[in-house]
Amino acid sequence: MHINLNLINKATGEKISGQSEYQDTIDTIINDLLNENVIPNTNVHFEYKDGSRVPLGVSLQNLNINDGDDLYFIISSSIQPGPNPDQFLGKRKSPQTFHQLGIFVLDGSYSMNDPVAGHNSKKDAVNEAVSSLLTKFKESRSVKNFSFSAVFFGEHATEKLSVTPLSSINENDNYDPTVGHNKATLVHTGLDKAETIANTFLSGVDPDDVEHSVVIMLLSDGECHEPKQTIEVANRIKNNPNINICTTFFEAMGKSIPEAESLMKTLASGTTSFSKTYDSDTLRKFFENSLSNIAI
Image (tube, rainbow, N blue to C red):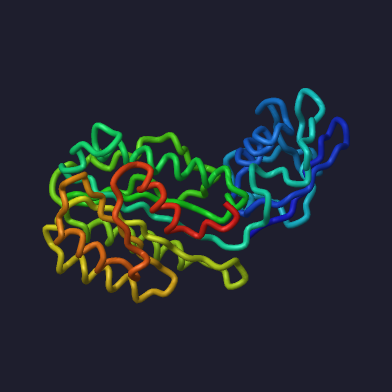
């Protein structure tokens, strides 16, 4: 849910109006102002009307801040408004119209160490594809419409990235799915964890909030050791109309595995939700096409 704010330079009286979200923090707003060249550096703090300082790192929802409130900020020099100072929150050029959670569910089994076109290993290609996708979406006009999570799986599953608004994600983090895994391929462990994450995200939606949805982007490059259990978990997830499973079989050139490819097709929410990928570029396009890339 968004909130309208007026940010006022206490020294000059200059005002900027715009929208944030209740889960944003003052740190987020400061970084957005910096990215928009509204402030010269992060040496700035905010105050309420009564002059008391607004704490950093606390969401607006948990602060005494209401829709339409004025906040005063203090910096060492006057603000330098960008071409459109009314849009002061990061690179968002349009208001939030939906909230979609993209969950990367990435195979971290031993075969992800195999070489693939353009990279020494599949895991390197995955890392690059995830980073480039996040970078592109962060630069889009719809940045506030997305949050992401990441799950790595092999013989078990781990949550690499908890649900995080796109604007707060480190796109340059390490998204190598073999970290902590590198053994068997039990796809259902990744889907199980993704289901829990998705249900938690959807359960907290306010009736007046924008539409929420989840896309599970499942990648595997080999044959699942427990396909029956994996299909059962996928079918359970697909019973929720607000969750879509998109799948890809990440194939090394000349190493087709028909059984694995067939399973990934079965797990997908529909025939158009499956694709084969071969390198970092086709993988990034799979991620991008899986999401609601409105106004990218």
